[in-house]
Image (tube, rainbow, N blue to C red; front, top):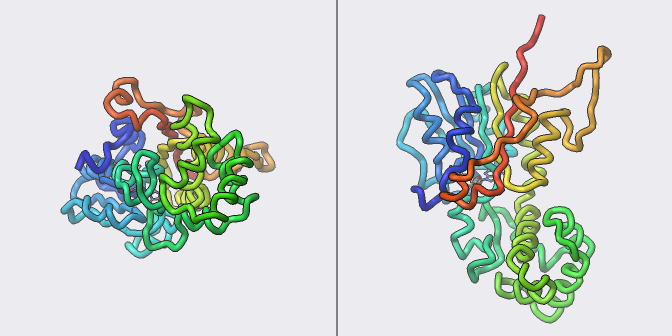
Length: 304
Ligand SMILES: C[S@@+](CC[C@H](N)C(=O)[O-])C[C@H]1O[C@@H](n2cnc3c(N)ncnc32)[C@H](O)[C@@H]1O
């Protein structure tokens, strides 16, 4: 199973969930099930774990355990998926965002700059929009905006222009074809970082990652029991900023709303202001942990 995905911040995230053995927990990003298996170890026979994943490949990792249910859908359907399991409230939620190693390392999924393959990038292969669709159909201005916003690509306008020129000659369908357009635009010696930024931007767009995250965070705040924890591990600054703002201020752009008495109106309270990062030895063992940042928030107890 370790070849499917090595869980990141495993010990830290489990500690942060502060598990009640008889409670109901949710892993919204099941993947290889590394975090889920560890949660199950801490539950007693009354405990339950509901996991979500939109990728059908994750089904192969489902543990043989009565207490476990996999809901094969996008985590933006969190509330609905839980309702289908007969649940309105849960004691803790874990989200380990982004793509699994299995997805990255499967050439036909088209997520990685390392392998030749179709430009697909769908976490859920049943959705219609793939990366090659984006490259073929989006207007130049839309492409520019994606590369700038989601990839923080310096010359996003030039990338969009070159893609539009290239597709007029021939559709861009494969990783190699896209790399051939991009490489002349990259600074010498920085090619891989440059390609990775453009690929990240496309992946975020294809999977509507930021919208799904917003919807999941809002629903998480609705379904958490008092004192329940929400633990989110993110891998790039756009996600982390969104999580940080939501935990601190209750809004995604960081705007604060206060009540009559000057108290912040926010659904969750951050457990600490600082993000938790992996230790050096974890990064050495698992380089994919390098960009991970974990944040934890709690549903406050109602007073009065
Ligand atoms: C980083 S991996 C999680 C790995 C997992 N924690 C483990 O230990 O194996 C992220 C997983 O979440 C899934 N995923 C990402 N975004 C999702 C979303 N919006 N809805 C449902 N699943 C999602 C991906 O398909 C992938 O399998």
